[in-house]
Length: 573
Image 1 (spheres, rainbow, N blue to C red):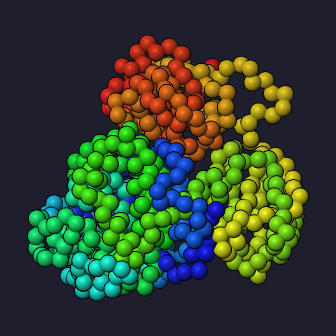
Image 2 (cartoon, rainbow, N blue to C red; image 1 turned 180 degrees about the vertical axis):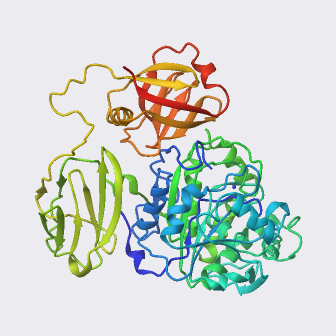
Image 3 (cartoon, rainbow, N blue to C red; image 1 turned 90 degrees about the vertical axis):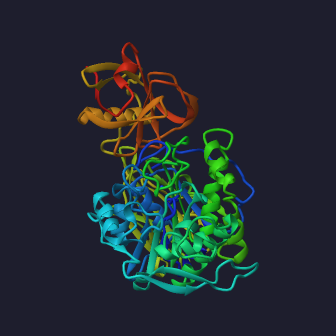
């Protein structure tokens, strides 16, 4: 159940914790802008249904649209001068979050990308070099970039812990931090060579610290010039203390978004990181830095005996979970969390009409009317929110959250739109009793209508260079949507090699997924994460939506090769 009660709080320091594993300051299983979802286990030690636990929102989509949607799900608006804290990435090949992924969100909040110089040398150890890297990696093309310690450090105090003891009592951050009213710390979750893992807490501490402040944290408060040789637990504890100091300095105007893609054991400060063993997982967001990091850790540990083994070993070899233990002890957040899957809870399955649920007898009856293409809901309690999703040809095309000002909300709608109401205290509300709004059908709905002949197989051409292969499409919604795209024009996708058994690339839009666990074979073509096309020359066990299979595999593996390819998909004559 969505917990929107925290929306009353003034947390806007948007720490998008894509969870960065910054070497000292690392894109997931398949690609830098899109990725595969991973089913999460039914329960963990810290995941709970307790509505009083901090909410952690999750989507398995890793796209610009999904990043904006999950920020909107938090119910916050960045105010004033907004800093977006993230890693611009160490050259030449680190896994930093690409501008194409984060650009829409940065523009939405009119943010400035901020970072501080490194303490380990490299290409971002001075402001001039750092700004050049930011330009080379495309960040100056989407926003202003501020190296916050360009003019030195400033000292901020570490608040008294709620329990336990602090390792450091003061924190040294980039002096430009005082220029910002709220902050988005954009972190990329993955492993880290010193901390074991990097997420919201690390990005809030090491990421916001000046070059000298980084030394202070790494050494556990014993040196500003030497980041090596300090006690490991003191370093991990100092990160929690420094995070507490930044949250306090920003007056709590902080939210956290963790992007779990390119899940390498190495971080974005490593210019040549190890290839990930895991597929991408998704994006998580919360107002609690401890809860969002713990939720990410739990998702990794669910695969500790499989693809996540190497990352779990990295975390445990550095005693990385102690960061969460100390952060929770000093009171900056909770390890217990309520995980809310916005893919299933906020966006219901697409139907050809808007259908309500029975009304609750404990609440005032909401009234719903439909006229001239607009849906109006009135008699709502204060603080209620309407979640509205629109679909085009079966794919999500619009997602918005509207406030019910003065107890009324009105939105333009059409066939297939879905709605969900949430109260101010995070309870799902019925729309109204036994009312269905019929609004016709899609003009270009690719789903076959009654009586349509679907017995004949649909064939697809897959062209790679000069080689052309014929594939038979599956009889499912995603395959029909893909066929509709190809009938309009051939679909060209740039695809990268992953783990020596598949090619994967972004479709550029989402199809209607119907995932099931399967073991693929050479020649299978599947949909991954709703928006990634994967073609197999080997085998893998995962949750996919199957799109089709190559009819004749002669020359298939040779055509795919070992590097990047460009594939052109078209409907066969």
